[in-house]
Length: 138
Image (cartoon, rainbow, N blue to C red; front, side, top):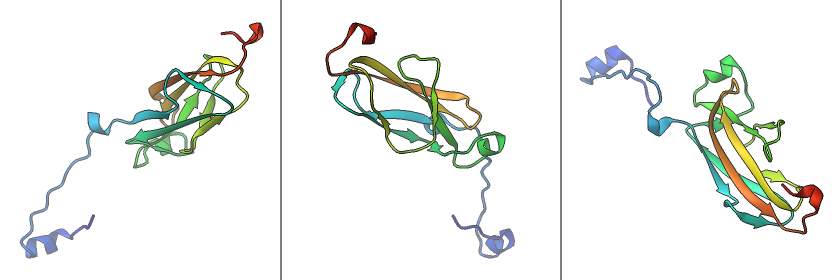
């Protein structure tokens, strides 16, 4: 974007229009998409979850000052199998999970702003291949 000094614009016969910043429209609302794996997939070994965001950039910045940044930034909160604990993920790279027991699993990705307010959640359900023991059934 080029800015033109107002008196110069007038001298050149240009009309300047100022547009006020407003709240994001629906098209600008941050959105999270899980690209893979698909729901109900049967997986072996490592689980690689690929995702992308729209209208928000994943960034390891937190707090009120980070919330003011343009473009909008945020991070992910990731609980696995409805556990009470979760981890905060600040990378755009795929998530890689290893060591999950055979059987069904659920991973939720919560898209959060720099103050940890969840904006949107997406969940992927999958099954790890292998023999389930009674200890590992969900």
